[in-house]
Image (cartoon, rainbow, N blue to C red; front, top):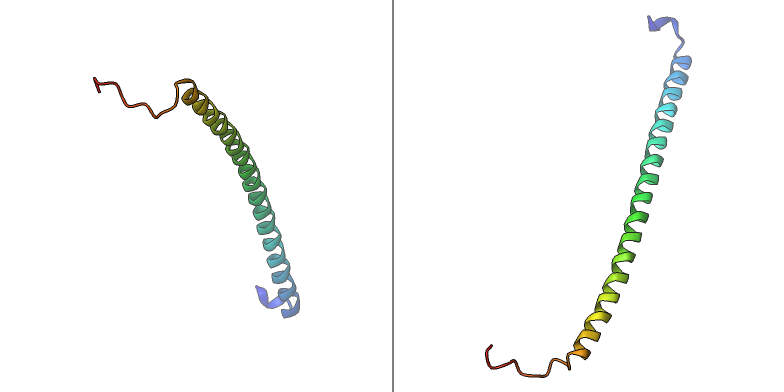
Length: 79
């Protein structure tokens, strides 16, 4: 029976529940944001590693091209 509870007390209880719900939602959102931040940071590290590898491979390709005498030679007749 809610008739025994004065309307003002009922309103305060509802506001307390709403505040509690908002605090719970905020905590979950903060946890999600932290998790996403960790994921993005890890992905950035992987991207940087790949960039360094690509730069190193590009340098190796240039060295190989220079070592083979450039790419201006026509292909051999059997091609």
